[in-house]
Image (cartoon, rainbow, N blue to C red):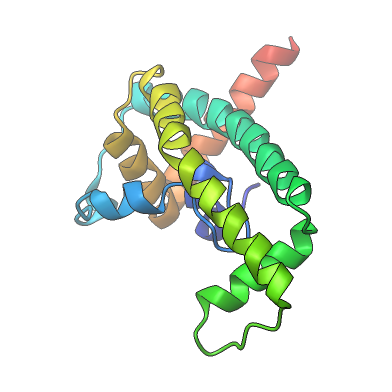
Length: 168
C-alpha cells in the first residue's frame, strides 16, 4: 500500500520532483488554501474519477521526470549532482559546495525547467479535467486522502478493483 502521508500529494499533483524543484510550486502558491480537508465529502464517482486521473498523472509524471533527467545530463551535470546543488540552494543553512562551472550549468538547467513549467502544469490540469475533476477538487481529494484512513482504504479498494478489471 502507498504510504499516503508522504507520497500522495507529490504523486497526485506532480510526482516530478527533482531535488526540491517542483513543477507546480507556482500553481500551488496561486491557489487559495483549502480549509479543513477532513470535512471533505468524496462521492464514489469522484473517488473513481480521482483514481483514473491519479494513474494517468503518474504516467505523465514519469515521462516528465525522464525529460527533466535528460535535460540535466544534456547540460553537463549528473542528476545526483544537480539534486545535491539544488538541495543546498533550497536550504540557506547548507553551504553550496560546487564549482563555478557546476553553478553555471545548474542555473541554466533551472532556467530551462522553469520555462517548461507552465506547459507541464497545463498538461497536468488537462489530464485531471479529462477525468471530470477540477484541479482544485483533485487537490482537495488528495489532501483528504492524507488525512483519512477510511478514504485511503476506499481509494486502495478502487485501485485494486481497477487493477483486477484490467487483468481480467
